[in-house]
Amino acid sequence: MEMIGIIIVEDKPEEQEKALAAVKQAFGITGEPFGEGPSCMRELIGQHFVLYGEKDGPTGVMVFLTSHLGGFRDRMVFLKSGVFSKKLILTDLMFPMGMKGPEKMHGIEVLVDAIESGINVVVCSDTDHHDVPFMPSLIRVLEKNHPKGKIPVVLDSKDWGRAVVMGIELLA
Image 1 (cartoon, rainbow, N blue to C red):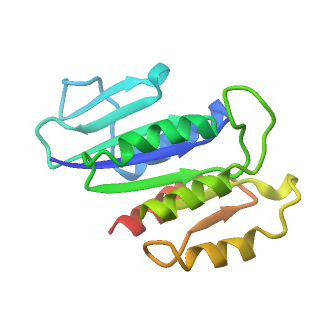
Image 2 (image 1 turned 60 degrees about the vertical axis):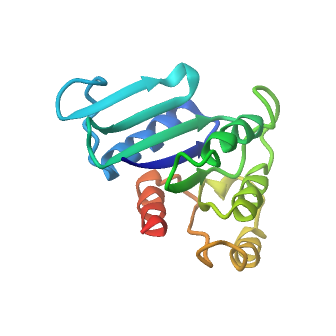
Image 3 (image 1 turned 135 degrees about the vertical axis):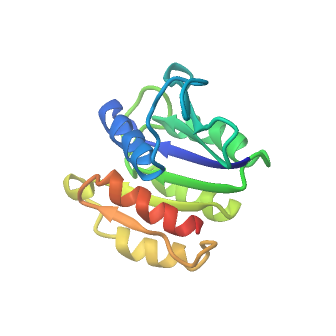
């Protein structure tokens, strides 16, 4: 079975749910309980991961959710474990360092880690209420070192559906 690993870095629970729904829609996941019916799903939101796939099917999708930079680093260990044939990171730009704390531009660290690890990354952030006019220029510089030569960006609105589609295009 081909396994696709996805990390979603987003600190707002309602946005995590939207991102997860976008992944499910893009991959045609019905969300039935694990082991029942043609699709299976094992949801362990409390442990911050979700495993999707067809029972004995060709593809599985594991989604790791995290709300902070420390959690991202923990999930990167799993993403780089060798289990996944395709890897993707969907990240907000503004979130805390740990479980508590102020939102800061930690998404830049996620971008750098993804690039250094050769993992595809998509930015999905509502930066319209943050003072970050430098982001488009920074993305242009960083994407020169990205595995695909580009970093898809959805700024000024969190359109997770669009971000997931852009990410799937990178995986092709």
